[in-house]
Length: 244
Image 1 (tube, helix red, strand yellow):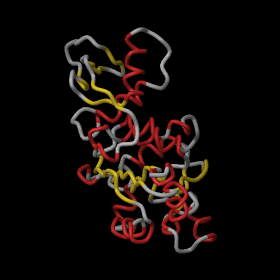
Image 2 (cartoon, helix red, strand yellow; image 1 turned 45 degrees about the vertical axis):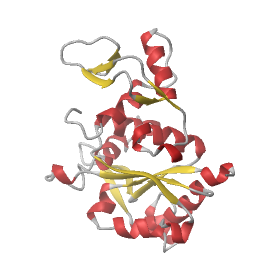
Image 3 (cartoon, one colour; image 1 turned 30 degrees about the vertical axis):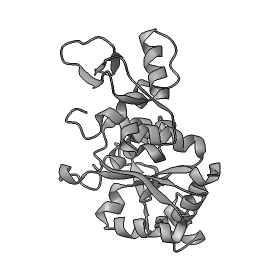
């Protein structure tokens, strides 16, 4: 199969889309009949803080960053209903998946999306003004209903952030994985191969792990510079767990 026919993209149906009952509409826009794209994996996610921080890491330090974390975690649209705070994470696969999906989504700014392509998904979104603690306007946040990977590199990083290898059927798994021979534990933002009271075992011998994550785990064990953050490794293992 030609490489472009195996292209992957992460799609996130965000809390505002779920609250406005747009899930069915969005799925229909991406249907195989219309796009040639297929599901590779799908999961309903209670977004933990580590996952939110890592997904939006490029925006850290910007005025809208704290609001983004609350947005993707569902706190803004379901402030009093924790059981409804969720995101639907989907891996789509097929010819030119990234380009096709982003065209269907439209501009990340809902106002621009409506002006450019009135029928696109994000044309149904909204712009929310943000204010500081003193009530001064500091800028806007785009509640744009959906996330879609921007390029092949982002798609790989995001898919490995939101999904474990075992969340994806082996025949459609695109990135290399390997079987762990060690135990790995997590506690208070740190990863260790040694158990300490109160730590959480997130990988054990026999578990299938992204090969790139295993490389980072070995770098941590040896005290070497990491290819990427501890958050990027642990976040997916905290999905839908009691711990945050």
